[in-house]
Length: 186
Image (cartoon, rainbow, N blue to C red; front, top):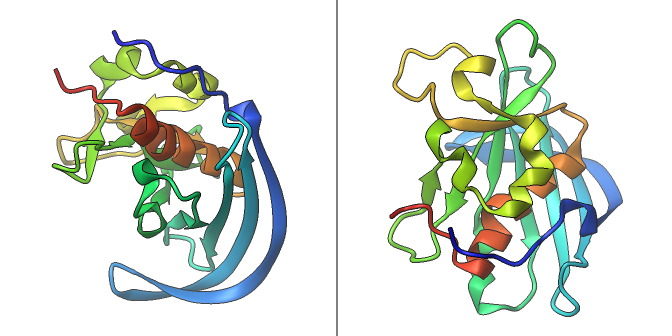
C-alpha cells in the first residue's frame, strides 16, 4: 500500500460564519431549507489552506443534506471542487434513526471517472486519514434497507447537526484524495 501524508481531521479549523434561509435545486427539483456557511482552515498545510463551505439542510425530512465548498485554494489538484458536493441521506434502520449517511466515494485523480465508490472489502485499503472516521464507517445495508446490489458499499454516519464531521468527510474523500492522487483501483 502506498504511503500518503498523514492528514488529520483534528487539524481542520472550522468556524461558523452564519446561516440563512435558502432555496436550491437537487437533481433539478427545488429544495428549501437553511444554508450554513463555514470558514475552514486546513492546518495540515502551511499555505493555500483557506476554504469556505456551505452545508444545506433541507426542511423536508426525506431530502438530502448537501455539503459543498463555495471557495477553494488556488491549487491545480483542487480545480473544480466548487462544483462538487457530498450528500447525506436519512438512515432508516433501527439503531440509526436520527442519523444520516454519506457514501464513501473517493474523487478520481485521473479524471477518467467522477468517483470511485468504496466497498466493504476495500476498507483496509483506505488512506490513513480515514482512521479518524473509522468508528463512523458502516456498510450501507447496516443503516438502510436496499433492494439493489449496493449493500456492501461503505458509508459514513453523522447526526444532522454534525456539520464539522460532514465537512471532514468532504476533505477525506475529495480534497486530500486529489492532492495525494489516491486510487484504490489496482
